[in-house]
Length: 146
Image 1: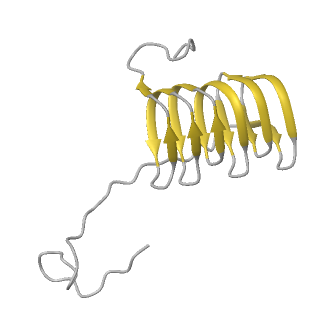
Image 2 (image 1 turned 45 degrees about the vertical axis):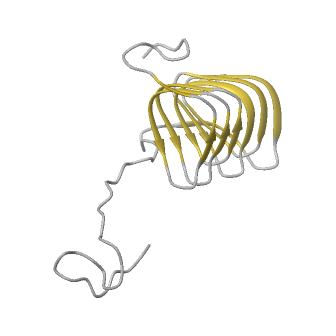
Image 3 (image 1 turned 30 degrees about the horizontal axis):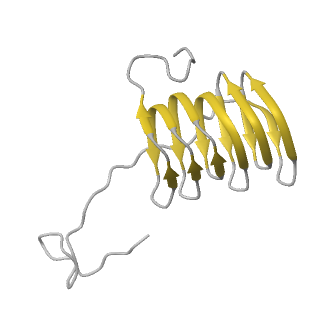
Protein backbone atom coordinates (compact mmCIF):
# COMPACT_ATOMS: atom_id res chain seq x y z
CA UNK A 1 0.00 0.00 0.00
CA UNK A 2 1.37 3.40 -0.90
CA UNK A 3 0.52 6.71 0.71
CA UNK A 4 0.34 9.56 -1.76
CA UNK A 5 1.41 13.01 -0.67
CA UNK A 6 2.01 16.20 -2.53
CA UNK A 7 -0.34 15.55 -5.46
CA UNK A 8 -0.84 18.43 -7.81
CA UNK A 9 -4.09 19.27 -9.62
CA UNK A 10 -3.38 16.84 -12.48
CA UNK A 11 -3.19 13.90 -10.06
CA UNK A 12 0.57 13.56 -10.34
CA UNK A 13 2.69 13.05 -7.25
CA UNK A 14 5.40 15.66 -7.17
CA UNK A 15 8.43 14.07 -8.75
CA UNK A 16 6.40 10.96 -9.56
CA UNK A 17 4.09 9.45 -12.11
CA UNK A 18 0.32 9.85 -12.70
CA UNK A 19 -2.05 8.17 -10.29
CA UNK A 20 -3.82 5.23 -11.91
CA UNK A 21 -7.06 3.82 -10.56
CA UNK A 22 -7.13 0.02 -10.71
CA UNK A 23 -10.52 -1.69 -10.40
CA UNK A 24 -10.93 -4.05 -7.48
CA UNK A 25 -12.13 -7.62 -8.09
CA UNK A 26 -13.35 -9.92 -5.38
CA UNK A 27 -11.29 -13.11 -5.18
CA UNK A 28 -12.86 -14.38 -2.00
CA UNK A 29 -14.89 -17.57 -1.82
CA UNK A 30 -18.58 -16.96 -1.26
CA UNK A 31 -19.36 -16.96 2.50
CA UNK A 32 -22.28 -19.31 1.89
CA UNK A 33 -19.86 -22.05 0.81
CA UNK A 34 -19.83 -24.80 3.42
CA UNK A 35 -16.47 -26.47 4.03
CA UNK A 36 -17.00 -30.24 3.82
CA UNK A 37 -13.38 -31.34 4.25
CA UNK A 38 -10.04 -29.90 5.31
CA UNK A 39 -6.64 -31.48 4.70
CA UNK A 40 -4.32 -29.70 7.12
CA UNK A 41 -0.67 -28.76 6.80
CA UNK A 42 1.60 -31.77 7.39
CA UNK A 43 -0.93 -34.24 5.97
CA UNK A 44 -0.18 -36.22 2.80
CA UNK A 45 -2.75 -38.02 0.65
CA UNK A 46 -2.55 -39.89 -2.62
CA UNK A 47 -5.39 -41.14 -4.83
CA UNK A 48 -8.66 -39.87 -6.21
CA UNK A 49 -10.61 -37.21 -4.30
CA UNK A 50 -14.24 -36.55 -5.29
CA UNK A 51 -16.55 -34.19 -3.42
CA UNK A 52 -19.74 -32.12 -3.79
CA UNK A 53 -19.18 -29.15 -1.47
CA UNK A 54 -16.07 -27.09 -0.65
CA UNK A 55 -12.73 -28.65 0.29
CA UNK A 56 -9.63 -26.83 1.52
CA UNK A 57 -6.19 -28.44 1.18
CA UNK A 58 -3.25 -27.06 3.16
CA UNK A 59 -1.29 -30.33 3.03
CA UNK A 60 0.06 -32.41 0.17
CA UNK A 61 -2.16 -34.27 -2.31
CA UNK A 62 -1.17 -36.42 -5.32
CA UNK A 63 -3.59 -37.93 -7.80
CA UNK A 64 -6.87 -36.64 -9.20
CA UNK A 65 -9.40 -34.17 -7.78
CA UNK A 66 -13.00 -33.83 -9.02
CA UNK A 67 -15.51 -31.46 -7.45
CA UNK A 68 -18.98 -30.11 -8.14
CA UNK A 69 -18.26 -26.99 -6.10
CA UNK A 70 -15.05 -25.33 -4.82
CA UNK A 71 -11.49 -26.43 -4.21
CA UNK A 72 -9.34 -24.13 -2.07
CA UNK A 73 -5.57 -24.68 -2.08
CA UNK A 74 -4.14 -22.88 0.97
CA UNK A 75 -0.72 -21.20 1.05
CA UNK A 76 0.95 -24.38 2.35
CA UNK A 77 -1.03 -26.63 0.01
CA UNK A 78 0.89 -28.70 -2.56
CA UNK A 79 -1.22 -30.38 -5.22
CA UNK A 80 0.22 -32.72 -7.85
CA UNK A 81 -2.95 -33.68 -9.67
CA UNK A 82 -5.39 -33.06 -12.47
CA UNK A 83 -8.07 -30.82 -10.96
CA UNK A 84 -11.66 -30.60 -12.23
CA UNK A 85 -13.98 -28.31 -10.29
CA UNK A 86 -16.59 -25.60 -10.67
CA UNK A 87 -14.37 -23.11 -8.83
CA UNK A 88 -10.69 -23.34 -7.87
CA UNK A 89 -8.96 -20.85 -5.55
CA UNK A 90 -5.17 -21.25 -5.31
CA UNK A 91 -2.84 -19.68 -2.78
CA UNK A 92 -0.34 -22.57 -2.72
CA UNK A 93 1.20 -24.79 -5.38
CA UNK A 94 -0.50 -26.86 -8.10
CA UNK A 95 1.42 -29.06 -10.53
CA UNK A 96 -1.00 -30.43 -13.09
CA UNK A 97 -3.79 -29.24 -15.32
CA UNK A 98 -6.71 -27.30 -13.85
CA UNK A 99 -10.21 -27.35 -15.34
CA UNK A 100 -12.48 -24.79 -13.60
CA UNK A 101 -15.91 -24.59 -15.23
CA UNK A 102 -16.82 -21.26 -13.58
CA UNK A 103 -13.80 -19.53 -12.09
CA UNK A 104 -10.11 -19.91 -11.29
CA UNK A 105 -8.52 -17.50 -8.81
CA UNK A 106 -4.74 -17.31 -8.33
CA UNK A 107 -3.76 -15.35 -5.23
CA UNK A 108 -0.38 -13.61 -5.04
CA UNK A 109 1.30 -16.64 -3.42
CA UNK A 110 -0.04 -19.11 -6.02
CA UNK A 111 2.26 -21.19 -8.22
CA UNK A 112 0.67 -23.22 -11.02
CA UNK A 113 2.66 -25.46 -13.37
CA UNK A 114 0.24 -26.84 -15.94
CA UNK A 115 -2.41 -25.95 -18.45
CA UNK A 116 -5.50 -24.08 -17.31
CA UNK A 117 -9.01 -24.11 -18.73
CA UNK A 118 -11.50 -21.83 -16.98
CA UNK A 119 -14.73 -19.92 -17.46
CA UNK A 120 -13.12 -16.83 -15.89
CA UNK A 121 -9.64 -16.23 -14.54
CA UNK A 122 -8.41 -13.81 -11.85
CA UNK A 123 -4.68 -13.50 -11.21
CA UNK A 124 -3.23 -11.34 -8.45
CA UNK A 125 0.11 -9.65 -8.97
CA UNK A 126 2.87 -12.01 -7.80
CA UNK A 127 1.12 -15.25 -8.80
CA UNK A 128 3.03 -17.58 -11.14
CA UNK A 129 1.31 -19.47 -13.96
CA UNK A 130 3.37 -21.57 -16.38
CA UNK A 131 1.16 -23.28 -18.92
CA UNK A 132 -1.41 -22.73 -21.63
CA UNK A 133 -4.55 -20.79 -20.72
CA UNK A 134 -7.89 -21.46 -22.39
CA UNK A 135 -10.90 -19.38 -21.44
CA UNK A 136 -14.18 -21.26 -21.71
CA UNK A 137 -17.08 -19.44 -23.30
CA UNK A 138 -20.60 -20.78 -22.99
CA UNK A 139 -19.53 -24.41 -23.38
CA UNK A 140 -18.74 -26.77 -20.48
CA UNK A 141 -15.10 -26.72 -19.40
CA UNK A 142 -13.09 -29.90 -18.81
CA UNK A 143 -16.16 -32.13 -19.10
CA UNK A 144 -18.02 -30.46 -16.19
CA UNK A 145 -21.55 -29.09 -16.74
CA UNK A 146 -22.07 -25.39 -16.09
